[in-house]
Image (cartoon, rainbow, N blue to C red; front, side, top):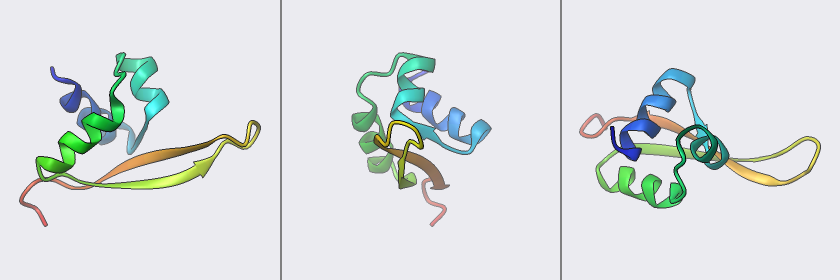
Length: 71
């Protein structure tokens, strides 16, 4: 299974994914490149900026809004 396929599967099963989840769960180090690859393939992904409640660190949670050719 490719990294892109793992990201899509994770979003299908869990609703969304963050860079940290991709790295810890799947060892994906080039997460933003994989997100760009998916968008180039026609996936519609939505990123929502969030802030960790304790550390106040900002991060983005990505959601799958549409599959290729399903616009």
